Image (cartoon, rainbow, N blue to C red; front, side, top):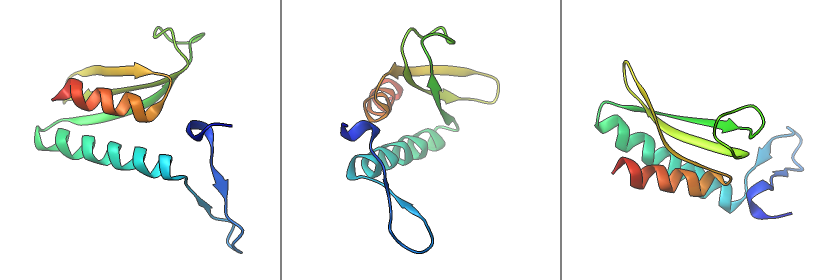
Length: 92
């Protein structure tokens, strides 16, 4: 299994879960993009896509920006961390 599809369940009594360093990095990238777009009066969306059910032609993720009346896909790809980085560059 690779780090892009790997989560761990903790052994604590509460049954909580914890994330891998790769997931933590991805969460920080999403937070940074969210804050950048907030400064522009825009929001973001992160959605899973399926090749068979969507028009994107890939199983993976789409990340985009949201405005009051519009939506714009910024990046599409199989790995969330890479898609978020590409979306941040596209938004810049």
